[in-house]
Image 1 (cartoon, rainbow, N blue to C red):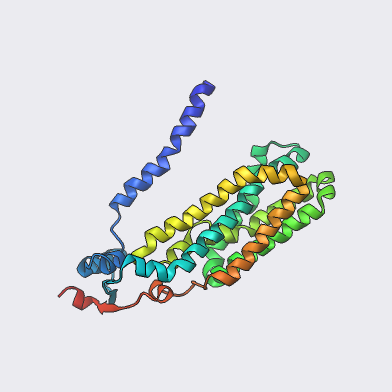
Image 2: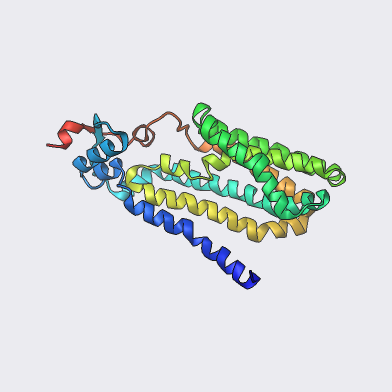
Length: 284
């Protein structure tokens, strides 16, 4: 197949997941909280609960009579905190993709593509599966993210401190970078998937809150793309990796200070978004 055709096919294929999401989302019902809290359709909310769970709802949220500005002002701090944490995560994660293959893959005698696939297969994917299926609810969001940032920071610090040894023994660099990737699975599952933006914003402001959270991540990615090469040029490899380690440790501290633990708590409890009616009353 001609290269001029191959890249067009690959580029076009990227539209398939997006179109799939649009199609599937159009077939999904609105959430019960949205129907009850914002549209005052308690009967529709009860129907959604029955459709999803197969059981009637005992309680449904009341209609939220507050204004958007009132709710947003009350919850702005955790919303912007989630954006900041996503930004820090993306700075660390995207920076790693810039230096990892260039420093390690060449020394191992493999291509950057092979290196990246190896990282995902041996460290990234197992870490994400463990974090998402075992740890996120068992130990909680804050410990998972804080310890992940801390572990990644330590690995990056060791990578920079042992830079000469890494150059002499690329396998050591592969292990250190792999453990950093494994540790970042925690922040990736918590902040990188947008969980906090959903859990820490009430129904009335959740779409805007999540948009702000996602924007924080995109700002972090942009900062990395434009500024990391400058840092790399000014400080060298070691200085750039120390900078990444610093951002990772900063992420651990900010996680501990800025957000509450959300595991095992209902959205109403987290958002002080209570007020419920019985399902029987919703059908009256």
